[in-house]
Image (cartoon, rainbow, N blue to C red):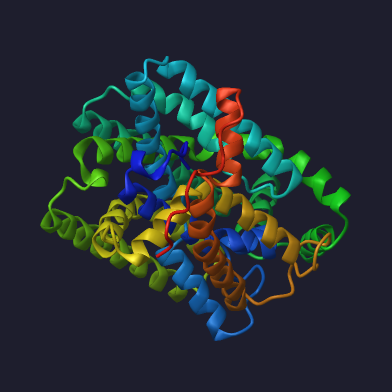
Length: 414
């Protein structure tokens, strides 16, 4: 999500990739809106009714889970550099500009996390983005090297959790048995009482959901320590991609093809192999922890730049598809928050109350519908207005001055 500017002052290729990412992230987030928390990682937790549900789990695990968040982090790092460069070119203090943007992004995320959905990522990006700013002057090589180092810290931490799980299995002390039960509740099949309580909560009143969301804030902020190093690593990869010319159209197409083939080939094959191994284990808790939780992150680090290169190849600037995707990307913040509003209305008790009522595979029908809405409304909106509604609010708050919203003349839609 980036501080928006009129189209002439933007890198269209960056917007195209961001547009794909904001739609793709909903393929993962839908599980948090519609199903009990454990179901995101473990299909055995809820929503596994037909073979199609297993296929839906496998597809999400291989193609989307963690990858879209990583791609967003990748783009956030690139956008950070763009904003800093523009501030310096305009004679502004880049540190002050960046600090105000991150502070107000945190406030917007705080509102999102408490008023709507506890799975917010904006606060996370604001805090990690504050650290990423201090590394903006690194060379491209150092950005990549430090990115790998920071991401590896998270990977080692995730691996230690798997080792702890196996240690508890071997110990079988009362404390270890309780620990295994806690792990099963989070990554396997939760206790029926926990599932019933969660379903009743999200089918219930807005007051109850608001109270739950407020109580989840410490956990949400703790995730900065849990996955923050990996996020910082991906932001550095995005900075390197911008500085190297990958995201500005400077790379020749044969180089993009090589990166796309290598990244997607290795990443998808690795994830596919993990999925097959997990299925061979019956998707037990140990397989979920090791496969989807610990071994997948290094593979997605390879897959994410492959995705970016493939998107740049497929959506050439100037085409109708690229224009629509770029519009979605220019309004990424508004589309992200609009997705939360719509999905919370559909699944929570203050709306249609559909939480926990849909099998896993069926959830992708509202996802596809929401992606269609993003494609349908973003370009017409930007033909009339300079920014998306939440981009306008963020920009106005960060500058402490209401920004001009309407454009002076309509831009033809494609």
